[in-house]
Length: 443
Ligand code: SF4
Image 1 (cartoon, protein in one colour):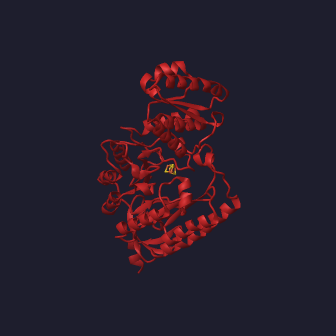
Image 2 (cartoon, helix red, strand yellow):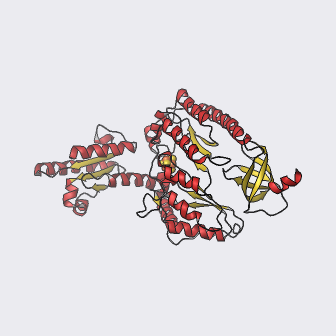
């Protein structure tokens, strides 16, 4: 059992980006998995533990975890008094305390106490009974508001700092979210976007639910609310039930943000995303099949990182080919840069030269501009519903159900109104149109 437990700990540590070291002197983390089945084994464990103290004295950032039966039998307190240099105590088979300590340790090192205070404040602000009061400058003017529904993230993609900064994933209670939505509507808001690092995991930690599909159904019943969006989804958690909710609920917009990050399976594995390029292709097909029922169809946005450590030209080409094949509406592009403290920072060398990262970035930028232009072209001459948000430089700015930016002109105040617009010009990043009644008159 101890061998199996040690393997489990090792595997959990590897998933965090650590690797095996041959000697205690080289290690950043030492796990002493103990056995008390015989006195000799117990004595040996005490001996080994005592021998680690000089190491800890020399390197206070060394993490020592005492695990196994010794802790299970004797409990933490007495051992803690006797071995104050031990950082973590864990019972047999329990890797949780060490992993929690290491991930929290990262955030402590990087963000010090400020982060913890921020989490506490965030949770308090977003907890039950909290209702967002918009600043007076936005009350009655803000049409589209963001509502966090999942805080933090526990996925730990190797490149990502967010889990360290925002803490472990936790869902806000549905009642608090709905109260906030109702309050926002009374303050003039017409559209809410539910936010989460992995928004489609909403409710996984709520014993009585709901899940995201359920939350969308409940929010759809809020009177006065016109539109609901949600972002960002993770491909692994996008369910048929969720897509059905999007398809069935008129207030939920056919607009899915689901990052792929790379089109090569090895790069995806190094990023620890948890899916393959083929999985992603299938998901896009599934989204389109379920949501393409109504004009102008569904809009799918993705995120891409170019120049991840070790990404070869051939691997990048697979990302390019994937985007070419899938013809997605939007690709948010980023060049990889190391975030200190992340797994990628510890495990990989940032070895793609900056000029090459830029070249790949530009290639995708040009490609996406072409794809977005083609998609926008399909809107030309069509009449689409636009929710107008504000007047910018003399023109009214709004968005289609698919989140396309549309500009139109009228002398009236159309803030917060959903109006039919005939599209007269369509470019890759925005469109222009004529309000339908106006268009009828012009014809
Ligand atoms: S990229 Fe997204 S899913 Fe991955 S760790 Fe960061 S926040 Fe979580």
